[in-house]
Amino acid sequence: MVIPNQIQHIEVYYDGRCGMCCTFHEWVNKQPRAFSISFVAYQSPHAEEWFPGISKLDPERDMIVRTDTGELFRAAEGWVICLYSCANFQKIARRLASPKLLPYAEKVCHAIAGRRRNLSKILFRKKDREVAASLHEMPGRQCKDRCRSLIDNNIPDGII
Image (cartoon, rainbow, N blue to C red; front, top):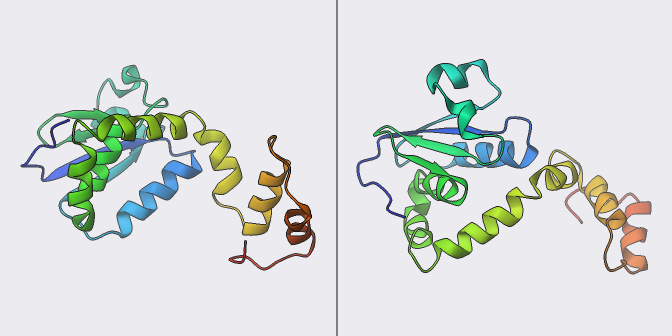
């Protein structure tokens, strides 16, 4: 992946109903900017107006990033470009874009994206106690008694 050197602005088309996508959007917006960025939920009426034909690119499957020079990046490459928009993370983004690391970024992105709806329901926009209860109910290795005890004893948020 080649990160364009002359980016001045990007548009990020994301799933506005996904807690993970919205949390990422909020996090990026809090970072010092290297260049301007606009976030547009693909469900928004503005999405098709600002990017005619975006619905044909299957935006509900992967985040789509369009640069001011017209280049498109999807999925892991889109996440890397978003990271690159953050002044403090440009060096990391360039490393992730390298031929050696991009395949790993793609694996992580696809693993998360494939489960993002379930992860969003469990991890985002909930209190710690609710997250712990949801995780406790998931199949897999059973928690020891400590897990159930933390949930039942109403441990304050931020502790779990």
